[in-house]
Amino acid sequence: MTFNPDADVSGSTARRKGRGAVIAGAGGVGILGIIALIAGPLLGVDLTGLLGGGGGGGGTEPAEGSVIENCLTGEDANESVDCRVASSQLALDQYWGENVENYRAPGFTIVDGATSTACGTASNQVGPFYCPPDETVYIDPTFFQLMQQQFGASAGNLAQLYIVGHEWGHHIQNITGVMTQYPNNGTGPDSNGVRIELQADCYAGAWIGQMTEQEDANGVPYLEKPTESQLQDAVNAAYTVGDDHIQEQSGFVNPESFTHGTSEQRKYWFASGYQNGLDVCAQPLTLAGDRL
Image (cartoon, rainbow, N blue to C red; front, top):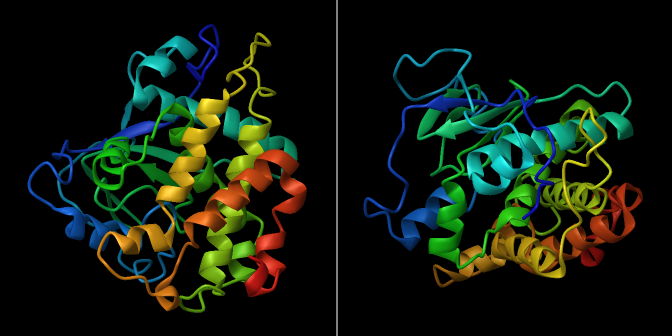
């Protein structure tokens, strides 16, 4: 359980878009194929190579998407991964609205199979990402099954919220000018890309550290205080998506190709944000590389 069962989550504006594809991997995509697909895009990759793409995917889905059905209470969010992911928007918008001047919310799309975006095609093969040109977070919840099946992550409720919080962190970096100040300068352990990702991990941790403070219109907290096992689950997710851990699955580790940071770095900055709040989250951008 993560959400307060009595919380009113009916106000989420997340929309489902896509055309119901089969989960990647279920049709025969093996571990090496999954690594090739997600080692780059996983959890908010630098998408500069796609920004001119103007979308992908076919079909004639409604432009506005469809509502997430049966998503009214925190109990619904605890029982349904789609509702859980969609409902996290309410707490995240409230949190960042209190911490960022002139905050504007990102769009939020729950991907069903695949859908076109300003950054190319969103799907569970690509993984969760934030697209700066359309200021939208895209998440296919079946991706959490890939984390479990292909990388051994527990990927429970709080881990899922960590991933959503990480992508929201990229939106904050975009609207506050961090992405402009620290543009893509290639890969490697000291690259801007790694620093951006570690800061987003810190942002996610800071939000989770205060996630019981966001309330619905009736004063009911959206989320309950995480248990120790839930926190370990979120830390496990951070560890699982480290560059070194992902590369180890294919038998090599090349630090000069890192885009997100090592497993230990990702764990550290998530935990640092959780324990210390937003005040420490500027540090990944400015610390010397050997201190990241």
